[in-house]
Image (cartoon, rainbow, N blue to C red; front, side, top):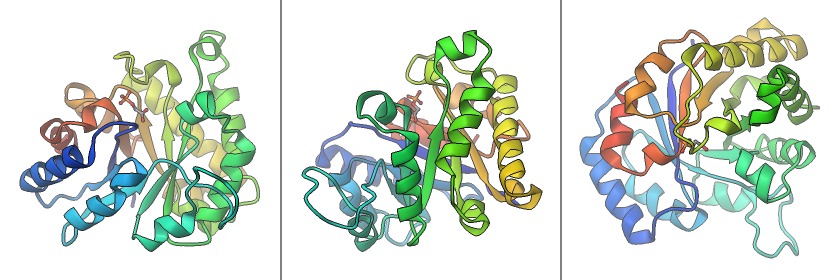
Length: 248
Ligand code: PGA
C-alpha cells in the first residue's frame, strides 16, 4: 500500500527567521492526517526545521548532497552531515540542478547509491523539457533517466525510493501537466521499474508529480491512480497554501 506523500521544495527561498515563522504557522495548521509530509529546505535551515518539527509527523528534506563521504569539495555537503542532523529525505537530480549545476545521470546514480547506505530516503527527480515533449520523446527521455539513475541499485533499495515526475515545462511556469498526462508518465515510470526489477518493486515505489501543483489542481492530480503525491515548489512557501494541498 502506497501512502500519499506531499513534499515541499523551497528551492533557494527564505531566511532563517522566515523559515522559523513558516514552521510555527504550519505546525499550528497541521492536523494528523494519513498523508506523509516533508519540507525540503536550503541546507542552512535543516537543523532549525528538525528542531521546530520535533514531536510532529512533519519530516525534513535536503535538496542535494555530495556522493563522497568527505574531502576537498568546497561548498558541498555530505550525506553523513545530513544524517547527523536527522534529515529524513533528500531531493536528487532536480531539473534545476541538471540544468544549471552540471548534474548528470552519472552523478545522480552515485548520489542515490550513497544515500541508500544510510536511512535518508532519496526523492529522485526526472522529467523531459518542452522540445522533447513536443517531439513526442517524453517516454524515451524519462525512461532513459530512470534506467541510468537506478543502474546497479538493489530491488530492496528501489522499493524505498520516491520518484518525482517533473516535466520541466511545468516547473514554475504555472502550466501544469493535465492529470492524464501526469498519470500516463507516472504509470510509465512504474512500467520501466517493473521491467528493471519486477511488478512487486514497481508497486511499492512512491511516484509524485511536480510542476505548478497547487490547491486548485491538487485534488484532480491526486485522484489519478498512478500519482502518489506531489513535489511542490511555489505553493509550499506559504503554510496555508501548502496545508490545503496536504488536505487535497
Ligand atoms: P513548482 O516547482 O511547484 O514551483 O512548479 C516544483 C519543483 O520544481 O519541484
